[in-house]
Every structure is written in C-alpha cells, then in structure tokens.
Length: 283
Image (cartoon, rainbow, N blue to C red):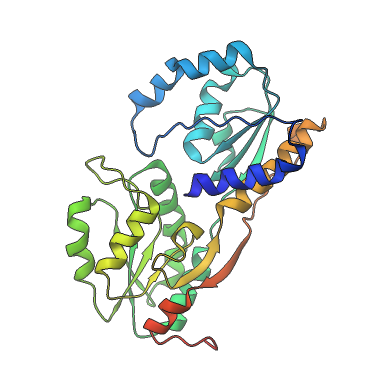
C-alpha cells in the first residue's frame, strides 16, 4: 500500500503532462523476496535488459531504502548518467549515496516523538509500549531512529520491541497485553522465517486480537484499527519526488535541488477507535 500510494502521488503530479511524459514502473519486490542472492539476481532480469536496449531514460525516481541502494550500486552500469530522485528513505545518511552527485530526494522523516507524547497524554495510566517492527532493512532503519527517541521518555514509558517474531505466534503475543499496555505498530511485513504479510493484512491481524489502543505513523494503517498518530503519507512522498523530477526534466541539475528533509505529516484520528477507548474529540 505504501508503494502504491507513492506511485499514485507520482502519477497525479504528472497527469497534466499526459502524452508528453511516459512513466514506467519496475518493482524490485524485496519485501517479499529478501536476501543478497535475490538482490544481485535482479541485474539478470530480462525486463532490465529489454528496457536498456530500447529506452533512453531522462530521470529515475526510486522508492524506499532498497531501491536507493540498488540505484547507487548498479545505476552507473544500468543507467549511466541518468539523474535520480529518491523518496521514502528511512534513517538517511549521505553515505547512502555512495558519492553520487547527480541525485536528490525526499527523506522519510517520521515524528515518533509526537506520537509517543500523544499516547502518554491520552492514556496516562498505560506505561508499557510494545513497538512492532520486522527485520527488513526498513524495519532495522526505523528501530535505529526509534531508539534515539525512546531515551527522551526514560522513567515515563517502558519500551518493548517485538521484532523477532513468527506470524503464527503473533495472536498469542497480542492477546497477553492488558490495561497497562499500548501498541505502536511501525513495520510489519516479514517474520523471521521469511513469511510475508501486507501492511493492511498485518494491522487487521493485530487488531483482531488486541484489547489495547494501537497507534501508528503511516497512512496505510489508517482506517484499519489504529487510534491515530502523527501520520505520514506515501502519496505526499511520491508527489514531492515527482515535483523534483519535473525540475530535472526542465533542465535543472539535481545537485542544485535541495533535499526535502521533513516529510509532510499531520495528526489524524479514527473516531471509531477513539470512541472505543473513551477518547473525546476535545482531547
């Protein structure tokens, strides 16, 4: 859903140029198929060979950490000289660019602190926060970010990371949570055995067995069981990346386009979930 939302943002921004700009989408699918062996095999896929033989690309938009890594490691070989706009990248560090200069992009900066402050204010008697993460590269990057924020809540909230899980064990884990607990769902795509679950199926599974409030930070969980949070959307990531790509198509070098360092986000709440946990609109 996150990728679909990014794609919709890109298409919306380019729709006025229908007939002038051709968009092509390639899915690495590294959430479903993890590992270095698969990552390296992507170079052998016929779709890439066919594209390169027939199309001269003018700009590339990459979505999420693995796509940026793929472009940095293989872009000069596959798409020599083609400028790049990245988006949806967690825990960004300039070293991720591997010294590339013809690149700019949109960072995926999540305001975890705002959502945690919100949880504490709305549920002052619940001190235990179970943070759900997976072991994907995105999950590991997000955990690094959350670790930095969690120290600011020392003596206020207790954090438990539920990251090394098997999908079949999740229901029993969720059912054990009680009146002192809150759930904070971040990434939930793949378990330690490699089984994949979509974002929507993941939150629906957790909601089915949870008796406690659930909070999140991304729009793909919204309307599926979270109370709310400071929400970041994939659509705005794609839209912003497309605006930057349009500047490049207009002749502006990517190194002259500053990184967008703050993701557009806003507090959002699901009234049904608010009502279930006694949260009033005035709160």
